[in-house]
Amino acid sequence: MADFGGVKSVEYDREQTYAGDVCYLRVDDVEGTVVTGEIVNEPIMGLIFDEGFEGTNAYGYAKAVDDARAVIFWTHDHPVPAELMYLCNLEAGDAVAVRADMTPSRLYQQ
Image (cartoon, rainbow, N blue to C red; front, side):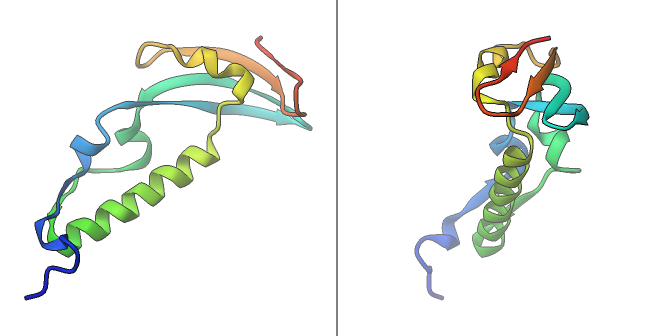
């Protein structure tokens, strides 16, 4: 059987790969360009995936690629404005309330 670039030796464990936390903007309300919400730091597993997954070979590789796509898509849907990135130094489970005018260069902390 062909190896197809090392795919036969792939071992993928979703819970191990995404064991960390992610900082994101949880939006509560939007009025025009003003967003009210919280900068939150939470475990990524519960936000994106319903359950763990372990797989090997081509199936494990395909699932790992699809999971990476899901994480990138989710992260791009919940961005923290660059001016507020300093608020991401939170402990897991903590949050900071923000009110941000998403017009470029008009961001402020509530």
